[in-house]
Image (tube, rainbow, N blue to C red; front, side, top):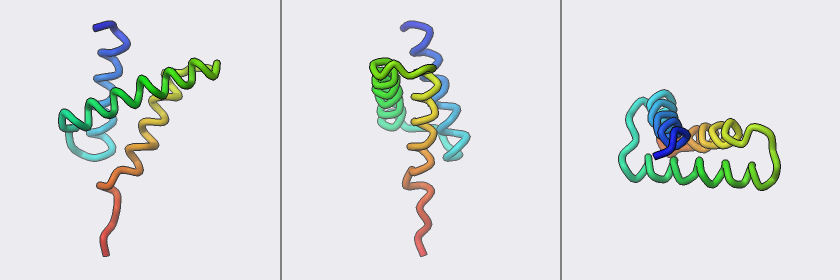
Length: 73
């Protein structure tokens, strides 16, 4: 694996635990990593500055919309 992939894997685990208070299961980790790659690719193709940072920010926003944050009354 290349260094940026390892860093993204670490980022996924850290941000998931920070926001949701638990480690991602294998399907969640895979989905987050796939999403990071897609967001980075889109930002790069759109010639946006800092595509890696934009992708990570997008993932954080997506996790903030996670079902674990839904309150059932």
